[in-house]
Length: 466
Image (tube, rainbow, N blue to C red; front, side):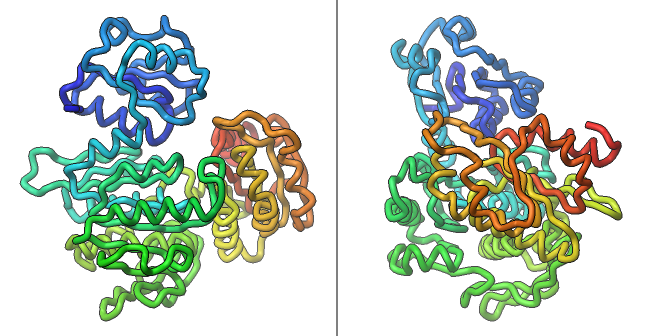
C-alpha cells in the first residue's frame, strides 16, 4: 500500500497521543485526514486548528462525504481503545474499507527508515524524546513519533527533511500494549523496563516478558540493543543472539551514572561507559529514573555520531515532556508537579525523586488510578508506592477502555497506604479541600483525565482561585 498516494485517511480514536502523531504525519504529506473521538480535548482542538475535521458522535452520518463515497484508496486507522460495539467501526468493516491498527501503520511508515525503537512498560516517552532531541539538536536528519508532547517542540511529531542528502533516522515508541511493538523494524532497540503490566492483554507476567523477547529479536542483526539492568535480569542475556547488547542503569556494569547530585533544577551526573566518560552533565528534568533514561539516550547519540559536546549542550537545553515530572508552578513556599505515572514502579520512582529533592517538606499526592484491571492487579504495589507521600488523596478510577469490575474501586487502596493522612475526594471537591490544607509540595499523578485539573490547580496556586 502506497501511504503517500492514498485518497484520504479516517482515524477512529484520533485524540490518542499515538494516533494524533500519525494523523499529523498524513496531514503534513498532503493526504486528507478525518477522525472521530469520544470527547474533545486540547489535543483534538489542536488537530482541528491544523485543518483536520473531527467529529465526536459515533454515528454513520458523521462520515465526511468524500470519504464515505467510495472505499477505494481509503484507509481507516483505529486504536484498540475503540469499543467493539462502535457504530462507526462496525459500519466501516461491513462496508469493505481497509482497517489497520495504529501500530501496523507506524510499522509501514518506518519500514524503510533507520529506526530507533524505545520499548518498556515505563520510561518510553521521556527516553524517546531525549533521543530525538539529542539527535535533532546535533543537526541529524530525524523524524520522531512520540507518546507525549515535548516541551522543546510543543508536539508529539518531529518531521525529517525529505530534501536532505542525509538518510533520516526515525525515533519511535515501541508500545507493548496489544503487542503493538511487534510491527516495528528496529536498527537500534532500547528496553527501559519490563515490569508486569497490561495483564488484561498478556494474561500474566511471563507472557509479557515473552512479548518483550519477541520485540528484541526484531532488532537488525547489525544493530544494537541498549537494555536497563533490571529489565535484563528479567529477560536474560541470551535474548538477542549475536546482536550487540549493552546494559545500562544506576547499578549497571556496562553503562552507568556516577557522582549523581539531586537538585531542584535538575540532576547532575557523570556518564561512564568503559573508556568513555562525560563528566558533570546537567539533566534539567529531575528524577533518578530520568538519569537512567538519559543514559540510554546518550548511548544511542554516541552510536550515531553525536559528539560529547553536542550531547552536553543538547541535554542542557532539554525541556522535558508534558506531564513527565512537569513542574507546573513554584514559588518560595510551595511547588506543584504533575506526572503521568500510572504503574506502581513509575509512582515509586517519581515520589522517591520528589522526596530526594524536597526532603524537608510535606508531600501531598493526588492519584487517579487508571483502568479497573490495573488497579485490581497491582493494588498492593499502588498502596506501597503511594505511601512515600505524607498525604494521599485518591480520585475515582479512570476506566478508559474498560467496563467496571465488581468490587474494584479506588477505595480498595486505602487500607494498604501507610501515609499519615489519606482519603478519597471527587474531582469537584479537590480544589476546595486543597484550599483549606495549603500543601507545600503538591503532586498530581495518573494517566486518565486528571490532566484536566492541572490548569485549575495552577490558577489556584497563582491567583488563589480556579
